[in-house]
Length: 434
Image (tube, rainbow, N blue to C red):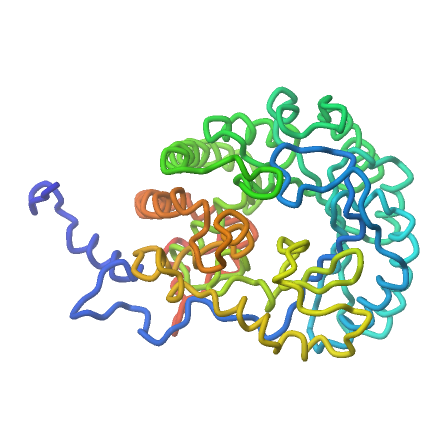
């Protein structure tokens, strides 16, 4: 399409803004210095995911770890060894996450290990925060009260209204799980615990319906997670048509969120990955470890199996090629992190991924998830399986940010990460949402 000065009278201002957003080069130079790093590996991990129960009472059709009904459960000895190693890392802050499988199948371990974590925290200037990621079905007043008493954050999975959720998130007998999950949510809320929520997107066309359900249930902060097409979900695929449909759904959702935020206090809406996509377009800050180059595997996150095997990422647990060692025969995690296998994982940068090397948007998505790339393609140096969506959604959102400054309100809590090299240009967008 061609524009004339008459049809676009503010062309100068438009070109200036493109340059300010580093989307236009002048004499082969942009506003961001060529040697500026959009992302860099964290010096040491600060997120530690413990798969304390590798079995699960669900049999979700898309489970990326293909959890059995009965799997190995972590012992207190292994949990303490993990905490001893983690606590010796010179990290300013950290999160200990109980994961699985379904971690609440090993709730007795949580009740035993949490006091030990508290004893470690009493010796630390910045205590570890504790979290649990659950399917929600085993949550009850007793567990919710324990979480509240011990300041444990909870996250659950709800894939939207019952008819959508129960299509894939099922019990071992093939019956739906939605009612039991929402009962667990109610138990938490009655105890004063308001769990975070994530939804796995089965069909792009259902994104808006899923999001409306979560908003109507009182969640103003939630994660939207595309399918992980490996493990039990290996026969599912996200092709280009899937990506195009998801872009269309995201744009519709953004319009709904823009309307909804008018009814809420500032920075209340915090929808991942909408907020991340906006942030990456307007700032070089990359706080989300799954969209950096390299991603957070082995530098921001570590995963631990029930047996104590150490992995660069919790999503790699169960794949022998990613085992870095075992807590029962390791005395120093920093030695493990500097080992050849972890350095191999961290060498997955956009310049080393053939499909990403010359992509316009490589600095914005960072090549995506290493675990999903390997899980789907059996090749660590392949692009994120969701590339068909990511490469299409960034230009669409870029135009929406340019046309509507209210888009900045959708940054939510990520506003604090809005930084620029050399100067703070946040006021170009009117400053923080008010």
